[in-house]
Length: 164
Image 1: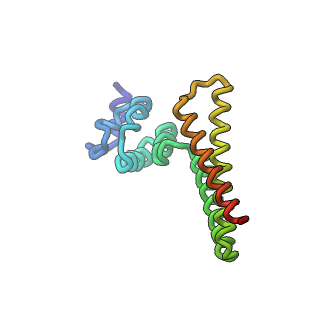
Image 2 (image 1 turned 180 degrees about the vertical axis):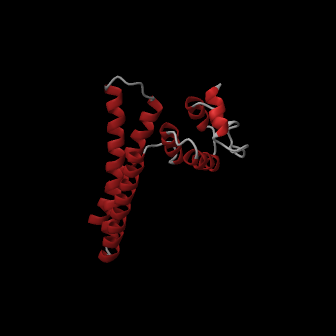
Image 3 (image 1 turned 30 degrees about the vertical axis):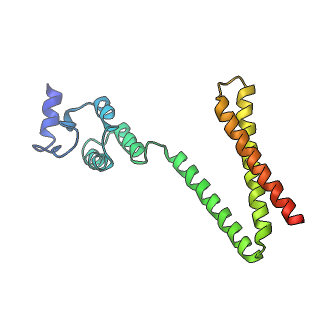
């Protein structure tokens, strides 16, 4: 009872009004943590502002930060950003080289070669699942085989027409 009175004295009347979680200041840390995942980003921001200015519980603030990033930790967010940045730079460099060379037949052949390699590697990975004892779909295996065969056929056709 004393704990409740101390809490009530420490805040003004209706201080947690407007928050998506009713009677927020009266809830334990565990109860708050359970309710955070159902809130929208706007509601999470309001709760975070309130938490920082009042109780500032580290576990609650950590969970709010985690949810604010879409449910992933900061290391994952940074890794994805780095990967996307590197891919964008590679693509831009490749585009610059293609424009500078002006040799569209060679670029088309390289693109077909990349496509064939991509489909062949996907098929190999899927077959590895089969040999590893993991359950696979025969339909999916046939789709990957058709995609790999089609890409290889397009590459062979382009190579033959280029050499002719």
